[in-house]
Amino acid sequence: METLRVAVLGPGGVGGLLAALLARDGHAVTCLARPATAARLDGHGLRVRSDRYGELTARVRGAERLDGPVDVLLVTTKATQLDEALDRVPAAVLGDAVVVPLLNGVEHLAALRGHYPAARVVAGTIRVFASRPAPGEVRHEGQLCAVQLGPGAEALAAALTAAGVDVAVRPDEAGLLWDKLCFLAPMALLTTRYAADLGAVRREHGDEFTAAIAEVAAVARADGAAGDAAATRAFAWSLPDGMRSSMQRDAEEGSPTELEAIGGAVLRAADRHGIAVPVTRRIVEELRARLR
Image (cartoon, rainbow, N blue to C red; front, side, top):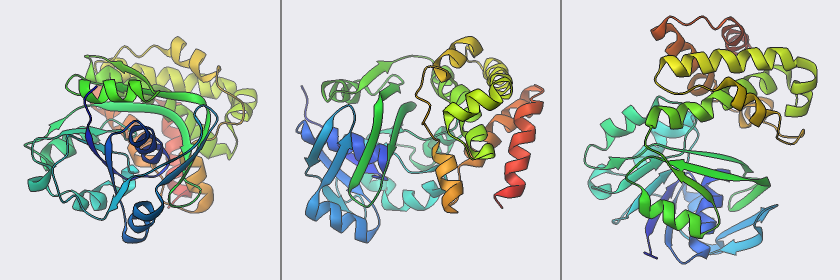
């Protein structure tokens, strides 16, 4: 298998987990982060506690800015931090590398393609429950760690598969992005709105959850994706009760949330296509007023 040079922009829960798995498998991984985090990673590596992968420590290089060529750039920041984080990756240094954003939402690809015109920006999503308790530490809950990639990132797909990640390569960019958002948007909006975990939302607000899933699926279909509401609901009801969304955690901590990248993106797409989404709109507007 080809050894890759991988830069990870935003080594939090998601980026840190993938960085550690790739580094453990022998790939040259550089984590790009703020000075204190970069120094800690450079000196101590990444420590992972995972229900699926066990406990592991992986050596990575920590740096504040990309200073040499890489084969792949994984963009795993929060959407709220993307503009600032991109300053760590000069376009001239990145060149024609493959760029894979594993961000929530559907609106970031155009921004990245404009920012890095020489690079190949490939759509990607990840379904995983991972958090960063402290710099250099990752907690991965449950067995879910599934990545979907568009065409053009086959070498990364092979590397992630060999590292133990569930990977699928699919040709439909819109479908790839909306499949995740069809679940994520209702789950994140409702867990945040009610300050409750997934199990409580299903028990106490199941009809509202189901309605929101159907609305987002309708928007997805209008935007060129399959938008299978029944499959999304089945997936949402298959997950453990205690799951919480990152938006919910951010709201509880008083941190900036990805409300606009997730809920706002659904509303903007619904407006473009003339799709009525009353349940989703009401929740987004309530959260916009509350989270200001």
